[in-house]
Length: 83
Image (cartoon, rainbow, N blue to C red):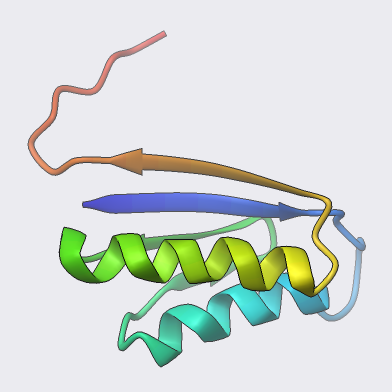
């Protein structure tokens, strides 16, 4: 399973916002290795580990100041629709 998410608001140049760092840290605490970037984070893992970690990410990011979280989850092997 693969997930990609973005937390907002963006703060422009400089250090990433606290809500983005807190979301990343929750994934690390779950034993996952996120690909953390300035405009979003992606993570791959087993469903049993990833789904609870994502629930924690949502709660933590909101508690840390996020106003919006955009999340996309893809199941391995599922066909990807092109738009």
